Image (cartoon, rainbow, N blue to C red):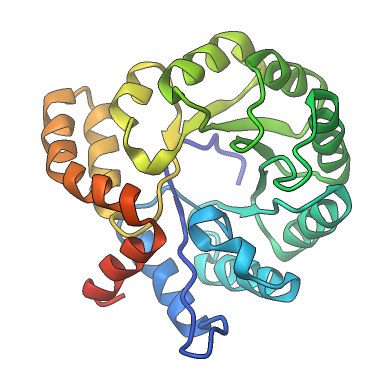
Length: 261
């Protein structure tokens, strides 16, 4: 898909069986739910997908299932964060071959590389890909100047997901620094700053998928200039967001369970 990424790109939650295996049938249901609920894109397996609990083979199967179930209806961005460069490159190449529309990766979350190490990591990913690469600025925080340099010098680095705190201010700094060299900067942090992000020029947000329909409705109101309407919806959602920030992924899954997904 060549259309610019914009809107609500949800992180697809990973369902497991009672014996902790990947629940493929339920994963397909989560994908269908997210698309029917108005997602503009699908992302994973990322933090909200519990990627660290998946084996390499399970991550590959996860990507195959989500790409297959999405069937080209909306973009699929494969999250390929790994402990170091070689497995990240290998998984990214696999995702591209499987039909993913893009790749997203955090810096190596165990090694915590310095600025030059981060650059080398994303350079290797860019060199390995022909599809867009989204830098997830989470974990070892990367300065706006480094993000801008990578957007300017690494051809496949085209998007950023900004999650360093204070996120809205960092998002503004990244957008200002990167300028036209970046096709778009997404917000994260579960959508808690979505209205402020939109006002600062974000191209969208990447929350988990349990209330895709509400996040999509908020974004559509913002895009139509109805900020009061968006804020009314957001204020109704805020107690759940606060609860999620206390208990994390268990809440995402409980909501999906109660919604019959």
